[in-house]
Image 1 (cartoon, one colour):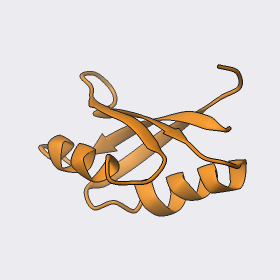
Image 2: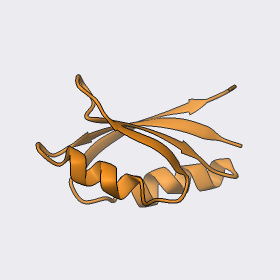
Image 3: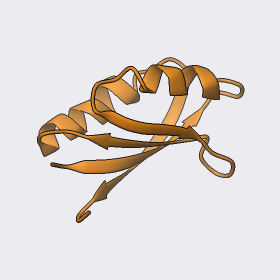
Image 4: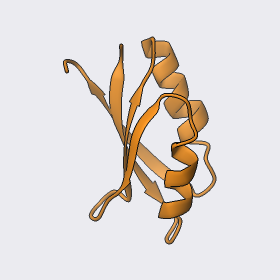
Length: 77
């Protein structure tokens, strides 16, 4: 099962709102606020690489107030 960490930058003050929206997306396993370069760290799982890609590009990146993402695909667990 493909998995990835998605590091997310959001508009200032939008962290709580975006984490709440992330947790409603099927396949988002974890989502946390973060301090540093990225505002949110999320772990996602999908049944295929294509669905993992679609989750990032069509569900996460399109959320209101998301400015940018960096996806780290996990090779082994």
